[in-house]
Image (cartoon, rainbow, N blue to C red; front, side):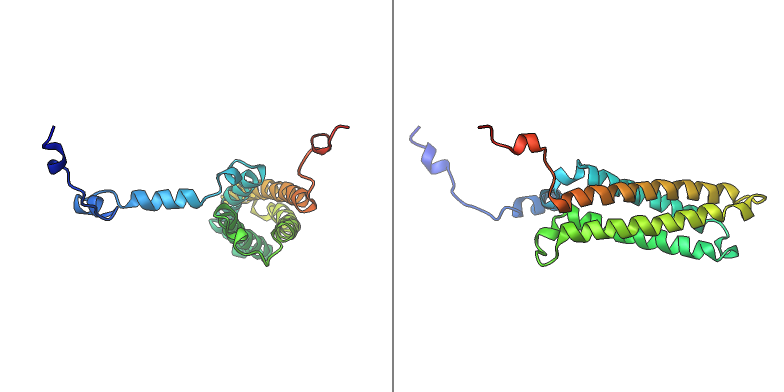
Length: 187
């Protein structure tokens, strides 16, 4: 037992030196930092699920239109513009909220901004959906009829998703997130 203290060394090393010397996983620290930055409660919320649906179905819509000869009808230029633009903006907004960037940009009134964005997106997608649905008929005898009809269907789904997002963002902006019965104090 008397030899124990002489065998102990108190040398320290930087935390990453051990893993880098032995070929350790340098991505482990990166993934830990990224997952710590994510707002996990947002992922499980209804607005996040609606945004994921908007991104997914919007991608399907514009991919179906882009795979067909959409240049035949000028109306599809509008549909494609709305679909691609809102897909990009919604993807950016999703990551802004997911990584809590809006908490760092306090000068922007985020609930109002998100509500206005979703309301405008719902109206734009409604016009794009109606344009798409009205323009399917000229493709009825071609191979691309199914593409354009499916694109109209996915446009309807995205329009409904943006409408629901506008409703939930309105509730968030209004600040009426709770039940009145649970917020009152009994006397």
